[in-house]
Each structure stands twice: as structure tokens, then as C-alpha cells.
Image (cartoon, rainbow, N blue to C red; front, side, top):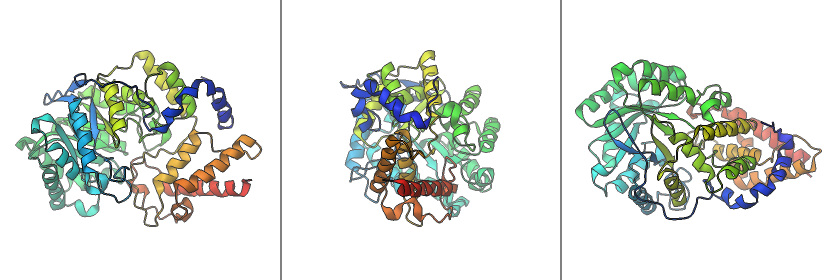
Length: 460
């Protein structure tokens, strides 16, 4: 494969112009342009859970980015969740065969479970599987009483008397093994959840994994004792082989999936789009994907990759807008699994993408709020966007890159208010311990701020 330096990036974009001429509209949406036409209501692909026999839709609805009344994701700003729109999304999903809905007490500023409960309670209980989590991140919730209260509150908010899929939330994140033991072992909460499963109030027990591989390996080593019904992992065509290269604290999805597969534990997939980054890929990558399959959206390639693994039970997608849901339904009604040739093609695409070292921010907003008002995700995502588009360079002699620098500065001020920009970071590091991707956020903010200052000094 031809290597592309950042210096030559804009030249390649120009050469790809003939290919990308018809795809401008694709870049306007996160998922790209989906094929037109009616979506079948009886073609959803399903996978069977070997533990309980659950017949689970390969597309799972992640209730993490529910729409707010101002049209944005409820993870952004302070607007209320648009319950009417949530209901419409759930109705469309169920009508097309989606039956797995994933939420958490931590999602949408603590309001996701309530909105999810309202939307799903309009249906018979056997029409859907509900997944939620024991999201006891804060130290004041590590004690047994507070954790049990959180679990019981989830049952109330969701308006159910049992949970289909219960997760220990984000094990391995933050303090690694020590924090995991404080959240779930020392307080007896894991044993409590096992007993709840025996009592039938939890039908499947598992965990979602981020970060410290020692925690993942430890929990799998105790599989004979805890009998995990499923495990939720981050898997996509970039993280398959490059997660650790992107961030040394991460673990390649190939390893995570392989460890589950050899134990017969179903995998539930999160971050199939890497927080949207695999639907907003560089234009040269868009050109390659469109050359191969002109009618498919950019996002559909990532969803097909995640869903093609036989040990995958469902693939989660946080869908704020109806077009996101419709695009995913087209991908999974039914799933057209990747061929071996498709798989190798995407691995080649991933290798090419690794030439542009973006910051591995998934826009999860776990780093927020910043006590000093800095809009951390917007800063990192603007940097990534400009890097993908070729609008970043240290070369002051090339006119194309001088234009690119000006574009970076103008876009920065538009994307991030000046009082919320990286220059206001004091390095308190309140943010980094909460980042699932283990980004050293103050270092990145200081690097971006230094870059912005150089751009201002060199701008025409």
C-alpha cells in the first residue's frame, strides 16, 4: 500500500476528486448517505444467546445519545430529553425487529433509564430485552447500600421487575484492579448480583470492559465461578489490530474477542463506529469505500465488520436521529456478512487510517464537566476533523497548508467558544481518570493550544 504523508495529503485529496465528486452529500451526515427505498420489517438478523436461548437482534439500540428537545444528543447541553422523539425511534426500531435496548444510570445526565422505561413500557414485556448497568463510578456509591439502591432504582426507572442483561459497568477503567475490587468485590456487590440472577430478577449477568487488561483476564479466569452470560467489549475494524497502537493502555479487539470466543461467551459490541470516527473518515478513505460499494454508507462498513463475527450477540449503536436508525436497519435487515476479501480490505483501510494519528476521543463526555469550563470533546474532535481533512501542518512554505491553517483557526473559533478553548486548561487532571480511552487529556489540550499559538503567529 502506498504510504501517504501529511505533507502530501491535500495532493491526494485533489487526485481523488474525480472519485469523490459524487459523495459530497455523504459527508454531511455522520453515517453518510444511506440507500433510498423502503426498509423491510421482517428481515432483521438475529443471534441466539446459548445461555438463555434469547433470540436477540443483531442491532442493539444504545440509549446513550437520546435526542433532546433542541435536536442535539441529550449528552450535550442541559435541554430535556425529547420523549416524543424517543418513542418514535423506539417504535421504528421495534417495528423493524430490534429487541435489545441498552441503557445506564449514567447516560444522558442520569435521565436515560427513565426515558427508556417510558418508551418501552408501552409494549408487552416479552417484546424487548433491556440491558442496564451498575454504574457506581463515584466513590460515594461504592458502599454496598448505595450500590444496591442504584440497582433497585434502575428497576423503578425502567418500570420492570427484572433486568434481562445486567452489567458491571466499565470494569478496568480508572483505578484498574484496585477500583474494580472496591466497586464490586470488597462490598459483596458481585455476589449480590449473582444471587439476584438465581432469584430471576437478573436473567443474564456480564460486564463491560475498558482499560486495564488485568481486570478482563481476571474476570474471565473466574468464568467457572461467575458463569458470565455475556461480555461487552469495544470492537471495530480500527481497534481490531490497532487499539494498543492508538493508546498503549488499550487492548486489541482481536484479543478480547478471541478470549471470549474460546470460552463460548457471547460478545456484545460497543463503539462499532469509535464514537462516530469511522463514519467521519478522511476523504481518501471515503473514496475507497465508495469505489468498492457505491450504494453503502460509510458507517455500514463498520457495522458489517462488527456484526460479521459469529460470536457477536448484538452490536450497539447510539442513534440520536431517525436517519441513523434507518441506515443501521438497512445494514442489518438482513446483515450481509463480510467476505474474507472484505475483511482484508477493511484491515488495509485501517492500516491507511493509522497514518493519521488522531486523538482517540469517542465523544463519550465522561471527562465532562470540566471545572474550568473547557469543552474538552469539542476541542479534540475539531483537531481530529482538521487532521482528517488535511487542515493541519507545520509547513509554513506551502500555500495549500497556509490556507489549511487559516481554516483550522476559523473552524476552532466556530466550534469552541473562546472561553472554553484549550488555552484555559490549568492541568488539574480531573478529566483523565474518567476517560475510557486513557487519553492524557491535559497533555493533548496543551499540545493543541501550543499548535494554535503557532498558527496565529504564522497566519497571514
